Length: 115
Image 1: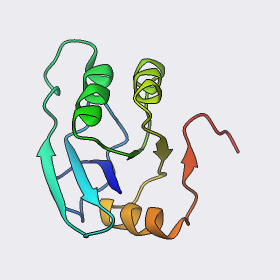
Image 2: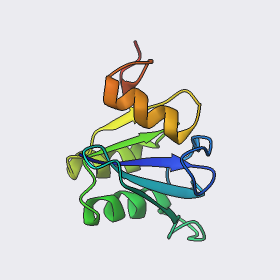
Image 3: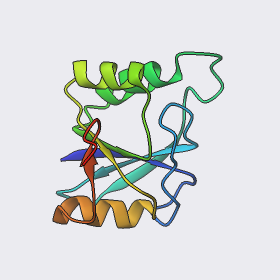
Image 4: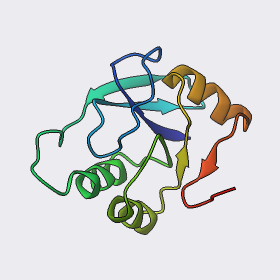
């Protein structure tokens, strides 16, 4: 499964970036092969619509899930339309988020789930 994690730096030891559209980096990870790559946010400097543009980028990358600290309503709609579920992480590192996601533990909640 290919997942995207918003991160504040280019490594798995980087903190989760709480922003989706304005995150510093995206870490693209394959949960089957353990391969990953970090890419600088390609739309970071855009004046508007960064969340929607990032959602489109994830769809182009064939991402199957997103882990982030927060996502706005417009980006959430674009991600939903692309069939990409959003999981909210309450902090930690990209490495922790990836491990926790694989194991289905540690408080991940789908976007919009207030429980």
